[in-house]
Length: 359
Image (cartoon, rainbow, N blue to C red; front, side):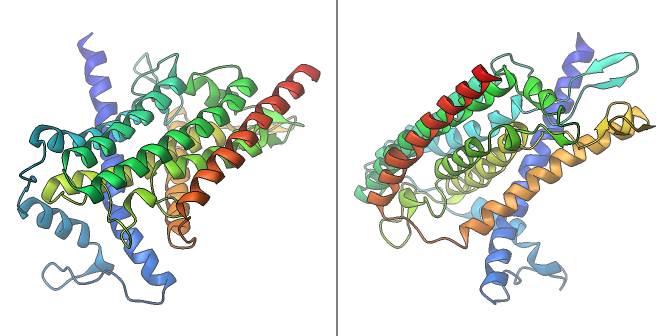
């Protein structure tokens, strides 16, 4: 029993350590990538003993700055709720990783260790539920600040998140129908099958339209460009106008952790999770031809590395979108969600059901 607890704590440390470190690096990568795309030098001022290393010390400098800033609460605001909101945003973004499998089962010392913090049989429902709780953090932040601009930003966020969460939930239904499970590890293993013997049956193959809808709706849920109406700096500043210090830092880090969580869920549902084409637990294989056996630990290491690289790719892609597309107008944002995304998600469910019935 104690060993099981230790193993679980180790998995939590590995997953959260990866997420928090990648979130810190993304705070640098976003500025550096935007600078490269706009032909600027970019973040490169912070240094240690004269070494700048392409601005990689900036996340450390940002952390020191936020730790030393005054923690200010509006005199007319609600101090408790004002403090609770940013850490609720951080918690809901982090807890999603509890059910995302980052590898297959590890067999070591006679034990089978699933590379997943919590193997729940309602994994997808867990993600949707806790992802939706992020709604409360922005609403509470705007309301507790006693600032009309913050309140306007939180109202915008509430309408946006409710609108796109419906499309997001409907888009996942197609994946559940395709693989017959709402457990993420079952879905990941189901993507180890092959179509025509050579094409990996990943979610992108089973649900191409569902992937586009899910990824678009998930980006809207992260409140980033082109869906950053709740925090549009040029108009209303946003729901965190009255935040400073580490409370602002919690919102800031929460946004990057949301990016990583979206990348993790997209990887798990649509891009094979930890699966590598033509790599099984026994080794490398070509269907019907040959198999090259590999040590179990090497296979697990390759699978975990593949999952991590896929997550990093989608993080990069979302940063690319952030600095490529212009912001929607608010009427365009809502019309796109209700008049385009939701009907397409319903059509996707109907077509998936028809194909399942026929074949």
